Image 1 (cartoon, rainbow, N blue to C red):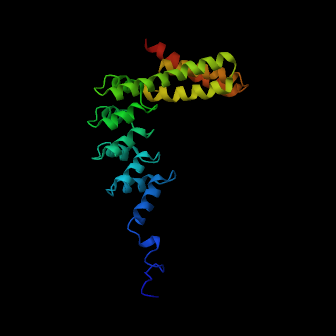
Image 2: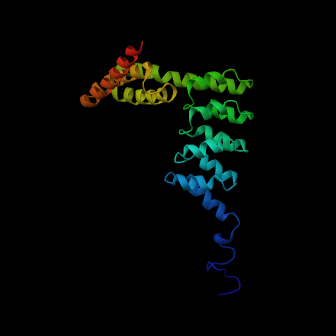
Image 3: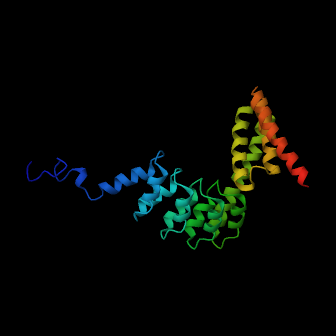
Length: 219
C-alpha cells in the first residue's frame, strides 16, 4: 500500500477521509423513513444540530425524543419538532409560548397544529405569526366546507378523502369520541355509500352512532 493510501484502501482524498463524511452518513440515517426509533434517539444525543433537526422531523422519532428535543437550545431543532405529526398536543402548546419567533412561526403554519393552538397564536405579539395562524386556520376550516360541497355534488371519492383528513384532525384536537367527530364520520359513511362501499359505510356509521349514544347517555 502506497504512502498515499489509507487504511480503507483508498487515497487520502477519498470520501471516507473527508471530515464531513461521518456527519453526512448520520444525516442520511436521521432522515431515513425506516430508521429505528432507538437509533434516532441515539442520534439526537450527538450534539450535531443538522442531524438533530432531521431526527426531529422524522416520523419514526419516538414521542420521548420529540419531548426532549422540544427543549433543545437550537431554535431550528424546536421548529422541526413543530412539524412532526407525532408531536403531542401538550408539547405543541408549550412551543406556542416559545421565546423565539421562528418556532412560533413554524407552528402557526402547520396544518396539523390543533385549532385551539392556532387560535391562541392569533393573539401573538408578532404580526407575521398572527397572519400565518389566521391563514392556516382558514385552510383547516375549509376542509369541511370542501368536503360538504363535494358530497353534495356527488364527487364521493374526493369527498371521502377530505372527510378522512377532517376526522384525523378532529380526533387529534377533540378526541375520537367527540360529537363533531361523530358528525364527520356520518358524512364519511355517506361518501362511502355513494361509492357502493356498503360494508365500510355501515361500520363507519355504526361507530358514529355509538359515539352519539355515549354522548347522549352522559347528558
